[in-house]
Length: 345
Image (cartoon, rainbow, N blue to C red; front, top):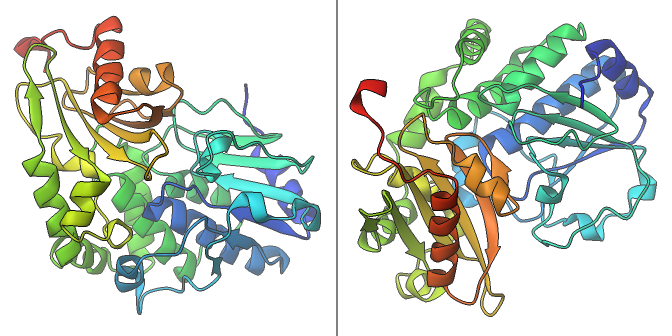
């Protein structure tokens, strides 16, 4: 497993006339902003139009956060990869997806095409699935992309910078995560030097919370349970509870596990979200409470992936209780329920 050089990737992008980027199905601003920034770069450098698709519609909240700052209209919404004729394209660019399967919500998804894949990512668990790869373990895919653009000699302008900074600050949890490195801070400073107003993003995301977000927070906290024996805590998000409270999940911006990761006296936390009625599938979001606890080991063991401090996996199970038991058992087998000595914090 190795990265291609920026020079090699430059030539790949230069020679592509009909590239397409399928966004990660687990939406966040890094997954949105990185392809939009790359689209600007390809248009500027090669006069190439990058097609960007998203499996779902973009939420009202996403439109509110970005309104008046940058354009998200280039994204082709409600376009699952299963519906795309890849023969009309000559390069598939996948950004911010630790696994190729993450561009789909179908666990059995397989790309039925011989199209070449360019994989640009920042997840430690990335298996270098592309024909061409540029994977760096940074705090955000936007940080990786910024470095790559500079190394390729493509000047990052103000429009690109607006996309990149939003992706970086959100995927780094406003620089609170253990995965945040000096390069993320340096990159953010350089983007701010270009004139991007970081506070505008911070205000829109943290001082201007939507009612749907607060209803979701209430559900997460009301369903919170702590397992002292196994040093974990978890909350369930069942469809019945969501519907009873009238919560519109697509209109929320919170990564639910982030809401409970600050709970003391646990090693890690997770949320269990029912995917759809009758599908017997639960989406698990894992977060570490301590930097010594690598939750990606749990996710990888169960077929998922991510970062040491933040990972996820979809678990087939008849009930939420069954999914919870699988997580706790896996963590125990990995030795992740051992108390962390205060001297090592």
